[in-house]
Image (cartoon, rainbow, N blue to C red; front, top):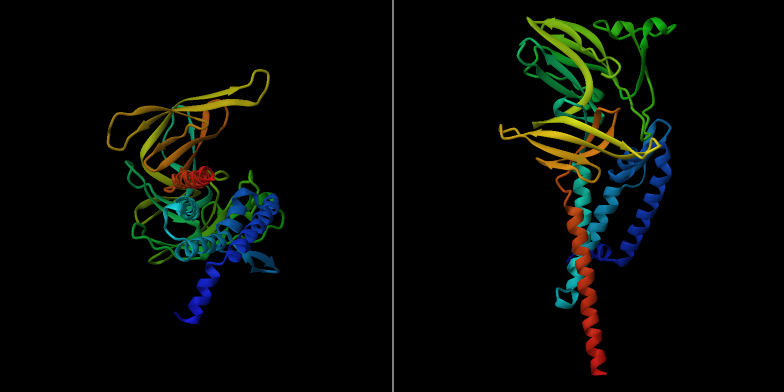
Length: 384
């Protein structure tokens, strides 16, 4: 084996590397805990744990400053695997250690997979309302809606990540190109008439000329709600169709309309949606509080699940610690708004069973190893 490979192997199987990585993990958690005051839980996860490198701002630049959670986790995984291969012998006396380490490996892999593929959405339902989609809390999309056919709407959803990069979008379903002219993840929007000395607007169509859009810093607080805005130009075969100013649908709920090539369209900047082939109908929302107080005691949602195959619908009660799991999605009772509106958290996490399996393997391994040592101690005691 070449000397370089021997050196890499000796480093990866080293117990010193294990101690170093654990110490670095403690520092990362401590730093993230302090920064949580400014970024909130979600911001800390993205900056520290769901990243390969933690960066800090120096002037206008983001400079790498510390290994992120992915880097430390992958190195711990490599260290554990190499220690298994080169240090531990596969014998019955080591069975408990093997099971325990296998559980740790499974836990690390499961966390990596969860960080990469888990998606969180929210579904807001009023009593009697039916929906087949959930909406993201932090991701938005530009919806270009073709309303020409009165029977259905043809929707082209453009992620705002494309708008932020300035990428031109030419979808075969649209007779024009969408050319981003600016995207701002958080803004303050007012009517231009109420803002003295407002700068000229890049928009010249729709509501744009009447709006004054001021970019703001992104707010990472847990209860904060950033309100994005964008400028987009629509370009047809014969030239520009106009530049529109689009703001978050909570501030401008009415889509901006226009006609082109004998077709009718709407433009709307809205939270990114995840559609599913089934729907939920909220039949009853219950909100119980402790007598004499406003403290929530229990809140639950009785929903009607309408399967996609035309099968019989079934009633399900969703409440705290009793979610609905269906078609790879989990619906939790997250919050409510008033007496007749529920807010469900929708989570897609294919690896949700991994933590349970890994903890079970770790527990079983520790018990087996304890029993093996206990049996050996008992034999030596009888011999003595």
